[in-house]
Image (cartoon, rainbow, N blue to C red; front, side, top):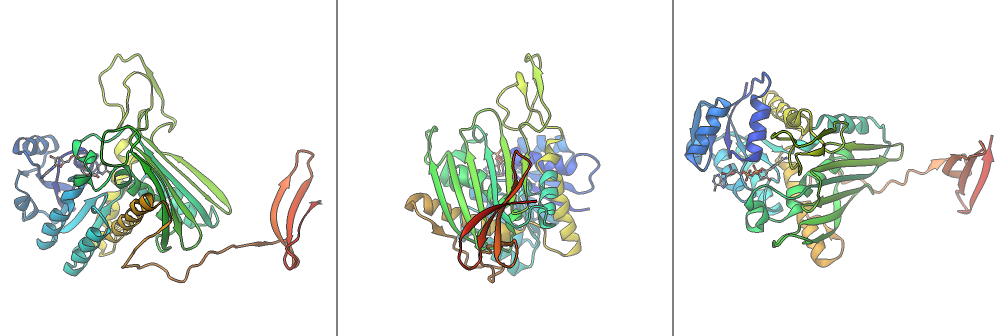
Length: 397
Ligand SMILES: NC(=O)c1ccc[n+]([C@@H]2O[C@H](COP(=O)([O-])OP(=O)(O)OC[C@H]3O[C@@H](n4cnc5c(N)ncnc54)[C@H](O)[C@@H]3O)[C@@H](O)[C@H]2O)c1
């Protein structure tokens, strides 16, 4: 059993507590800190948490707690993480780890220097569908991964601070792109270096000083491309989708809308449907077990298993740091209009990877470009001569 202190009682603090205190879970939140003592008390009563306070230091240093969970606005992560490290506690931080790559590096270095456990709470790489898909990809089901595309789009965040880049560090990229980038890294390989980035962003709708929509491409050292599509202007709920393709296969995942659960109602009800659902009547897309399907339960299981066995979790501060550096490159690219390098002063993956063409031999003389059975039933191959480079086609069988 792990005993945790939760700092922040907003949307994500609530999801984390539902994951930890739901079902018959063993790991518990033993103390909670909120800005307002009345909110802390209400939250503690709701979730049967024995200790509550509005004093962050008191919460972090509470003798019962071993782990501090950071669930605060992005500009406050650093302060809390450093306090938790100073107190010698393990620390789990929500996404994004930091406001930028430099700040993320400071936090990573501080945690490692102190030797405390650190985890990056990137829930979307822990959804049941993602875990199974990443495992299949690692087993080779898709062959060499060429393209990992991830989308998170919804009608915009639920609290004022997200919309203020001074508190959030940016717009839809820092809020949603961080998920998509890390999902792609998990498929492409976290040991494969993200080399450069091209990004478009715009403020299409909202009166804010940050992007409300962005698209980006992250090029990896092995030639794979990670693509993210994020928006705060998307209507119709929260669209969480991934598509991955490789030389031997393809995956498509719908995590939230169109998961096979559809409900029609005239509106004769007053109940929560799903995060960021825009409507409470008509055809709706509820989510069965939202906490599980968004990855929170598997995420905490991985964190605490790793902690107990003295290992690193699947997602550590190092991953949060890499994601922050990729996002920094996105903002630079959107400004410069060109590919921008991903600046990783601390790279721990492979450096021996180059783009692998992986041509397929048809025979000693030819490469196979394509094989296809045509509507007349015949099978045709398209070939390239290995020395002359000439292209040809022939019917086989
Ligand atoms: N899927 C996910 O992993 C996911 C989803 C949503 C949010 N988040 C992240 O979680 C963090 C919090 O987001 P949220 O959606 O819970 O926001 P929120 O606005 O719902 O909640 C923020 C909480 O922080 C508290 N707070 C704000 N300023 C404070 C201060 N100065 N001192 C102490 N407490 C303060 C607020 O009272 C509130 O309890 C952000 O970093 C966000 O990016 C992650």
